[in-house]
Image (tube, rainbow over all chains, first blue to last red; front, side, top):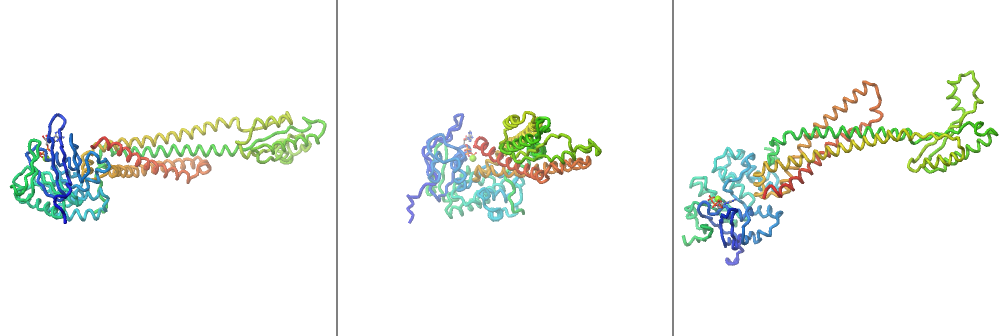
Length: 232
Length: 300
Ligand SMILES: Nc1ncnc2c1ncn2[C@@H]1O[C@H](COP(=O)(O)OP(=O)(O)OP(=O)(O)O)[C@@H](O)[C@H]1O
Ligand SMILES: [Mg+2]
């Protein structure tokens, strides 16, 4: 029997303050814990700090004060050499996709497996399956620049999940697609959540979360509010 | 569909990288030629070394000149000289040139009709030096002179030293040039790798974000250095081969056997193949370390 209260937080922020040089304070004294296997929407206006929050989770941005724990590890105590191994457990859909321009869709998706030393044939086979899953079976050999924004986004999603991450962070994954495709993509994340992946989907579109019964992490003026599904 | 991954970092497309294989080709060529010259010089030095310096000739004046009393005393002193020589460390063998041999060499000059059998002739000793390092020339000369003040010791060392010094300095200069060329190749690769790292910063950042390690990224540069090394090394090898064939051709035209005598062909092949191999190896190591160091500063 799993005691719900004892589930370890997979992400935990303790009194975190994030201020950029020049005095722009994004968060101050932020406290938050994200349980393992949960699904959260991360909302807030443009500039509220959603991307910054996610960057701190995937160890790309260090906080100015307080502590961030990822997989129970204090981010300040993580060695440089350990970061790649932790990142392999975190899949990220970047707001600006970050596809490698000279690699086709297939090789872009296969990349996380390649850096782990997975054999090329096997990695490409899995990449092709995932591209089919996101509806891009006809675009395997196309370069990112020849794909539409929405198609690039789906390549980015396929790449984020190919390594079977424990945490999936998606930064505006539905920003470039019509609402019906947006819903389809969210159902993909829902599938991953059902198999145990911790999911955080950042979006400034606050109507999207309403279709799902998942809690919302709402950022505003450097403060965080958790809006639970039942309160909606 | 190729079974290999395409390279993540488009290093081949770098404008700075396009001329690097040619620079490496030139460096491999220069290094190979310098090493070949150094080894040819070394082969020549070796030939001089064994041809002359391993031998001394000792001339004992005709016995009636130093000892008019009689031949028996002369024979005794000759014996003593031979014994002294044989006891000297570093000396292998002593051969007394037989009188007949000397006479036969003199005959063409003096003519058949002259009876030269009674001519007073010096005795010549041919001394083989077995170990030059153990032989103390000065001590030997002193002890021989004490037995017979008129003795003449012919050593080929004096004039030879200059030539040997020259030859050895040619070798040292050759090796110095090769070291400098390899150093230049290493620096070229280190600098172009670090430049590419800055050019491809955004791609490298993506690689990091999907979980690549420093070693993985460094390996991409190392493999690129291998490709550049193979390209440049092959061209450099062909150039040195061409030069070698051309030299051999001219040597034949001049009808000298110098090439075939002094230069061991397998040695030249060895140099021509090993230089590109080692240059490529050093380039790979250099790329790997330059990138590993630079990664600490370029990408956070
Ligand atoms: N590297 C940086 N240097 C300085 N300020 C930054 C930096 N990155 C972000 N900021 C600032 O931090 C704040 C939060 O930015 P962030 O990108 O996290 O917002 P967001 O919620 O993701 O916005 P959007 O919905 O537009 O993507 C903004 O005011 C932004 O200008
Ligand atoms: Mg953002």
